[in-house]
Length: 234
Image (cartoon, rainbow, N blue to C red; front, side, top):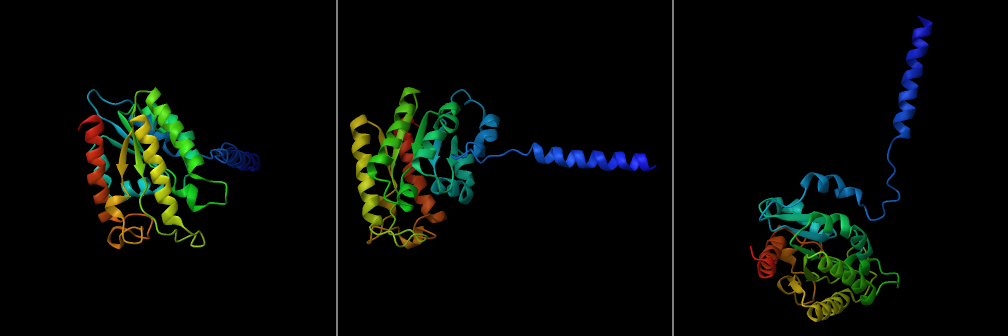
């Protein structure tokens, strides 16, 4: 009896240790490729005639699907937003979360989080270089490119010490438009329909001055559908 009990305890202890040993460590996954990896595998390639569009960005896109999931499920739209991500993380994810899904078009919304945590190492040029790399990868893989004018932001509620946010967003948008025009890429303007007199977001369209509420997303859906129709038809 004692031998059997000892063997049972040994097996339980071994199982516990083994379970801990095989627990996967994602500390090296800076760009969080693991977030959508399984979902990408389950989606597979587009069906014949499917006009798939991938939305690549950060919290603006991630929260969009949470607030209005039907907008994505009723269309061939795939949301690949991850809250808090900066443009180099989007670039790292670009092959897995865009190219490998074989969409007709990609919508790239990048730059705000780069500016929000600005320690003096981020400029329009560094953001734009990452956007350029993503756009060039898309073009190389026969994916239509839609670049976004970022939503208006007067200030970041979590970093109010950062001054001149509205002007930084306007300047970044101007740089994105100039680049897009030089390469004949489409521009999706999220700035104009949401902007108020301070160059921030209209109060009726936002939860915190940065992220839209459902009404704000409904406005974005109108201009998004128009841009997609212009680029790939719908």
